[in-house]
Length: 409
Image (cartoon, rainbow, N blue to C red; front, side, top):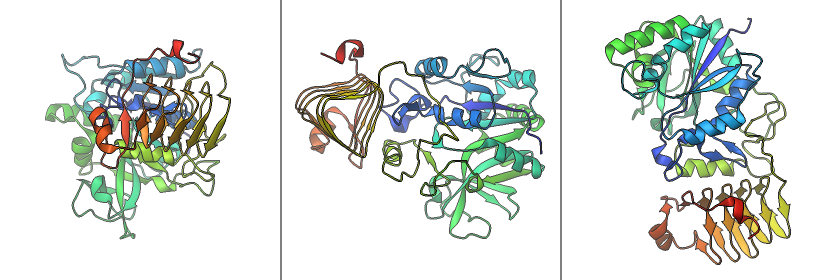
């Protein structure tokens, strides 16, 4: 089938309370991830790799960091007006209200959908780490003459109570949504797994428009809680099995249907570990399906002396003399002599002074960690100064250090 014209509406206003303090001054989609990315880069890269170039990014909570990142990183070809990544704050077209939910956010921007008149509208979240060819989902939508298609991830039924679960027939047609059910229904023909909604939806345009207008009259604000359960009773709503999605260049050793909701500190930390090793679960190097981010103009990383094991070191970092193991070091980080870093994430523009030891610690941007510091070794002491998760991960919140002066001091 020919590719339909698709307009993407990306929900990027997430507050990310469970990621605090990483979301103290930024929204969840703007949180840095890996060596050079932000979480939002993954959904945008998937859309662009899927040849979907008309993208509106709906923002709300503490959005300035995200807006600046999009401005610097996501300028598509300006000579083609139909290709864009545009940030859309709440316009308050319906009165003095912010977006009240995912459905309300799209409803408040129905004028943009009317303006572009697409065949399909992709309503996707901006806070997950994954690869996905959206055109394969679109073809599934067309082949099944669907009104709505929901991306669904098979999960072990013993873990399904943590998700919104889809109940569907053998043909994939959805009959019911269950929000974090105690006794989740299994997938057709597979009693060990259940269908978890990924929060990514494809709508036939006219169905979306009428559903949103009806939802407005009913006071409905959210897709997962309100609109989709109602549409299941009156329209053809299908589950697209994400495990069937195939991406070129993915290695055999990778987790083929890799998808992570990095909505908690522990999940965020573990997803970084998935990037490491000779055979990572999620290999960011794939020339056939690239993830894009800002075009950094600084120098390459520099090492005077170091022992580095199974780690990612990004551009502009300067390692004077350190032992680094199972860690991710982002851009322009200065690490001095005698520093030991084990299972850590050190974000951009941090300075780690000599003799410091860090273990299972996340250092947010612009931090200056003084000489001979110890973080991650004494839980009670760490908890006096920082946020510590139940699993013992320490988070040092965003600092105020001026990185323009710091690197060679």
